[in-house]
Image (cartoon, rainbow, N blue to C red; front, top):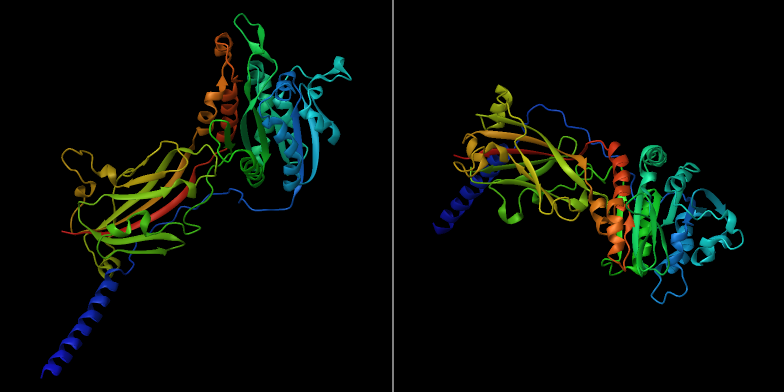
Amino acid sequence: MKIKNINNLFINFLIFSILFSFTYLQSKELCIPDFELDTPTVNVTPLIDADKNPVYVLFDGSLSMKGFVNPSNQDTNLYVEVIDDLQQIAETIGNETHYLRFGRFVKSITESEAARATDPSFYTCPHNPANCDNQETRLDEAIKTTQLNKDATYIIVTDLFIENKNLIGGKLHQLKKPLNKVLDDGKSIGIVGIMNSFNGTIYGIPISGGGVATYSRANKRPFYIMIIGDQKNIHKVKTKLEKQYFTNKGDEYKFSLITSNPIIQNLNINKKINGNNLFKSNNQPSEFKFEYIKSKLPLYQFNTNQKRHLTFTIKKPEILVPGSSGISNYEIKEILWNSSEVKCKKINSDKTWKKAKLDTISTWSEKIPGGLYDEVTIGLLKELNVDSKKKKYPLQKLWRGFRYFHLVNIYADKPGNISEDTFKDWSITKAQAQKFIEEDPVAFKTLNLVKLVKVLNDVANERFKPTLIASIALDFKLTK
């Protein structure tokens, strides 16, 4: 009798389990509203190897650069070491290397002449002082060389000490014109800044009244390596320099990437979204299910009560190009449907999905505003709660016992300006210059550095287009 009862219990349990499983599966049957997915627009060139192309290395020959190579300088001279390594670095990313010198003009030089960039004679032209082009740093002329070969990589070694007259009017237009072409061709601009020992004279410092002054009491000063080309080559140069000289970067090294699109991928295309983006494994609601549907659209299905906050998180390193200026604003485009029927069969037969007449009802935030290494948090349906004092939870604005479908598209809407902040403490303006030298500094800053970086960012941002980074859908029943 006991055995018979046990058998009956087992059979009943088995039948119950089958019926429960069938009911559960039925409850998770797809019944989605009619909609069209937004199309991903990411067009960033992947960081992969391709055929090698020429490399052009340009050396700033202005007289203010001489202090980086003065032999009486006893401190460690990274400038000399880095310049010596640039030839090898160029060979790893290109199939041939060309060398040029620039000041007011640009001219080709031989490999042996380029080797003299670590010697003071390169900046004083002892063999032809009368025709020595060492009085100006015409960065626009250097950047103009990018028109020689659109597939090449350009490495510009300079102090980026730019006079105001070169950043306004016709000179500014001359600077922007080749930059526009560079970015239109899908290239990027990397800026490596290195604080270096210095023993020489800095020329062309603007002072009150319209004149200029010199300064010779600095023992430290940054120099810069500007790399123009494919992102993969920019990061190769950056990585080799970091591994060789800056394992502990500190305040002696800076890097920023200027690009017309700082988004590296759409998370749906590569299926980088999972259940944990919305719910941690220890905080999942009842009857939770996650799957990809309808052309890689992540769908979250669950039941929940009104006391749950729905927060979707995106890790910035998964969407942002390393070293870029990031994103300063995100746009959320969304649609919310509701149905008084909760069973798919009834929803599909009676077509009970109703679209809510709502504007944007979700918000975004960051732990570190503008940062590259934290998360973007999307507060889903957060704006439903217009009076947080009366109703603590946004879902309290929804009807219990209803089924809801929430489609969310998240766009990168506006580029950031991290690169300007990166170099801020190494920069002085024309208005600050005289007071700065009167303070007798030993570490000299770069004239108009932030202003130049802002020009680069402005050119890149003009080409930026809002970029879809993720689309998700929520199908949930609000329990009574």
